[in-house]
Length: 227
Picture (tube, rainbow, N blue to C red):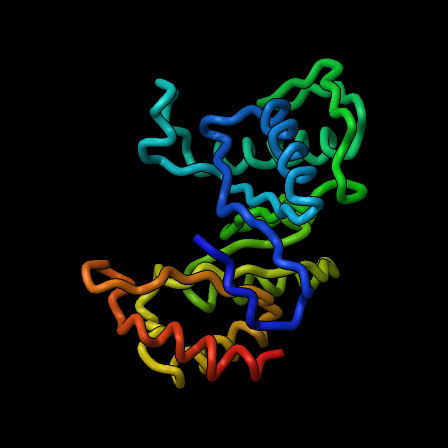
């Protein structure tokens, strides 16, 4: 799923992003090594997306139990904290609530310094604490009032980081028309969002079934005016 960078002028270089990696079937030590390799392959253009993990197939594929939202939030915090330390240092030893690293080596280190950027998905107060502590970008979705409350938490913490909104899980239809898209973008830009992500529409999709021609109209009529 691509990132549509259109809410603010950001960079002349195309960046690579992941939406989002799950701790349900990854360990931070091996994951950090994989991410570091991609950072080198992409010449320092990787932003690593991380979420708490869901309750569906990815939660049970390895035979593990489905964790409660609170446990997944605490696991996410330990996962991100471990990644943060691994990606900053040549050698890491730490023991957290869920993950342990014993002299884990990260050679030669990331291209991006002090480490590659972490984009953390969060929609509740516990996971927002993880965003405030570690994230270089915040990924979220949901109804506007809840998103506004979480955006205010970031503002209060003084975190001037990229904000990525995943459209499509509410009753709003930002692709219904150019006017609807402009209104949608404007409201979320006021909340500090820098990126908007949406699926390309298709007729058989239960949610994204607007006229696919709207994407071309947005690209030619809206994005140029957004910088």
